[in-house]
Image (tube, rainbow, N blue to C red):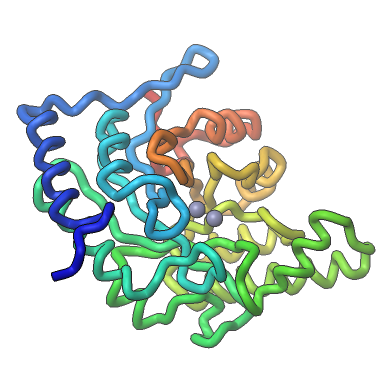
Length: 284
Ligand SMILES: [Zn+2]
Ligand SMILES: [Zn+2]
């Protein structure tokens, strides 16, 4: 029999039962309110969170506990795609993550955990879909996928982007790199059903206008990320000229950050974005 480790399903079922008892009879807290300039805002769901299946600090149940305490209706577990050289999810863990997710969904019917993945955007890649997961995996393994650009991935211009970010780069080379980066992102958007493009514009030069156009055509949400500075206020201003919607995600790598949205919302408000265009934020 397999040894019961820290993410063992029976442990998580017990913890989920405990949560179910705690929130019995509708005792789930109301959505947490953040007040900015005399207006009250709440977040309904957070579909970009990490766990120990990649390099987050908590288990699925820990993210759920935090989400419930802040009154969220659902979260997604979206650990890093398997293409990342150091902290990508292991393919053999897909089944374990699914079991953890279902354990919570069975026991807590009023709350939903989605099994997702933050796929890595690559330059074509071995699956020819500009991601580190295949179309078959997208269909079979996940409720939906989100995707973003990261360092530490083979065949994704990572060294050029990292060097350019740390030490600068000449104008002509920067322009070339921007075209390559933007092509990768647009390729991924058109080749896959991506629900959220995570932290667009982060970790290299990107043509945010072209990316916004592709998100409009592909009906992909543009993320205002709580852990990274992108979308920046200026990028939000540019993207909002297109018919795209936005989402705020915590990108929590520790359970305590699940459901955090204030910093991202402040960027959006500073950019003059109509909050109705942020699909998971309500004015109350
Ligand atoms: Zn990311
Ligand atoms: Zn992330």
